Amino acid sequence: MSRAWIAAVALLLSPAAAYAQAVPQAYKANCQMCHQSAAQGVPGVYPRLAGRMDKVAASEDGRRYLIAVLLHGQTGRIMVDGKPLSGAMLPYARLADKDLADILTYISTAGARAKARPFTPAEVAAVRAAPKLPAAKVGEERERLATAGIVP
Image 1 (cartoon, rainbow, N blue to C red):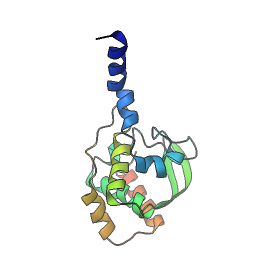
Image 2 (cartoon, rainbow, N blue to C red):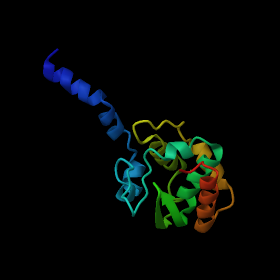
Image 3 (tube, rainbow, N blue to C red):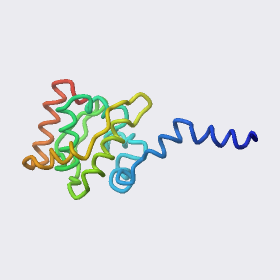
Image 4 (cartoon, rainbow, N blue to C red):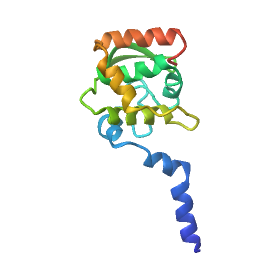
């Protein structure tokens, strides 16, 4: 084998290359413009997801909350990395359950140490079948989960 071939294979198998390839199209088309390609957000404007959402996805309440955010949106003041943010997250209920599950899996595994079990379309469908929540109620649920230590 040539050195160039070995170098090319090593690059393709590197964690950075694998991470870049793992970005789902639904995230690129709907989330990346605000939360950025590596889910790092924009400080003071759009919250960082990488390295945080795995903690939320570790509990069933947290998983339902994350799904609700994508389905119903969220409004209100939140604290991220010790700093307040105010704004609104738009709802993405128009997307298919699989696309939402792919987005949630991506954001809950983004970051060097993030490890969360994948989201499934069935999980998304179950939350979608429940009564719709106003975006402000989703924000209140976030506050409840933050108080409980589920949302960092």
